[in-house]
Length: 411
Image (tube, rainbow, N blue to C red; front, top):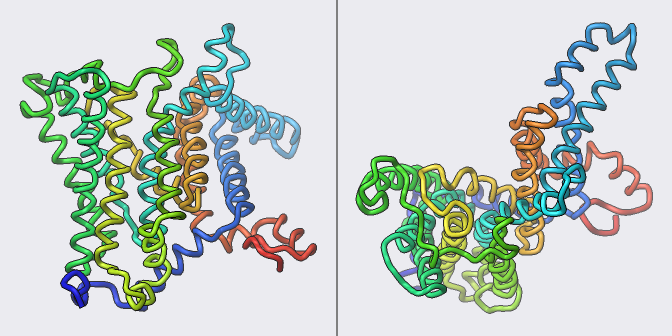
């Protein structure tokens, strides 16, 4: 037995609890495409109720609901249709715009917003497929963004080289930050959920402090970094009229690389073997503790790259709030995509659409922007409980009559 495969400390979760967590995660990852679609539809339906309830016209017609129910249902339909049509116009295609550029700009904003989510979601997907509950993408995104910013504002390099070095710095720092959790789990059996959550808080306060020093603020009085050099930014794909940058192409390539890693490489097989059954993997000669470290390094590097694309592609300068909720949204993205690269990309585009379309939904339809958060939270709830989706869905009952199961196999 090697040093890296020593028995874990008593602080590690007992085998029964560990197995229960893995079974829950595996149940979520094994959800069928029909369950995923139904979870999204049910989340939209639940949010529709809140949209109608928050509308002033609906509230006014509810007073005389039994006298003239058509007024109430008509107002409800107008509120719901107005909210979702505005969301579509802000995220996909603005059919009311007067110019071609403004009509297609929404879909480019969706693609732009999805870039950091793709990277962070891929990182979490690698962890989930390996049986690790990495909840630290938020901190990993933030330290990656800080590393990219430091390189972008401190050094002077040729275009292209500067961008590559900034991205590599973000990948390395993000990987090392996540590697702390992997190392502690491998050596002491520390729970990766608790460690990564704590690292999130440390990252936020650390970056907030660094933004008051010469390292990132560089003499400024506000907690915001200078704008990164043009040589360190991602080139725009469609010209100055759009914000879509080359980071989107890099994200798609990263998704392909993660697919190859997990499905075609020996290392990826070891990741998946550990995620399926640690004891069996250890019996087969896989160094499980080393896999823990490598998984977290990979996840952190991808999340750090997500932070780099947010700064070098979109924001151009760093603030403590630059990561927004990217790391936490990425958890839903990975689960919604069943921790598969293609599914993660599609889920990131969905969440990018919600981000891009929510401002117009608020201004045009007068719908609270928090409704988008409700949609996201409802999707998480339903994805985390596949049996609930199946039991609540009339489609499940219809499919059962024809001999099919929403678990993806013939009943």
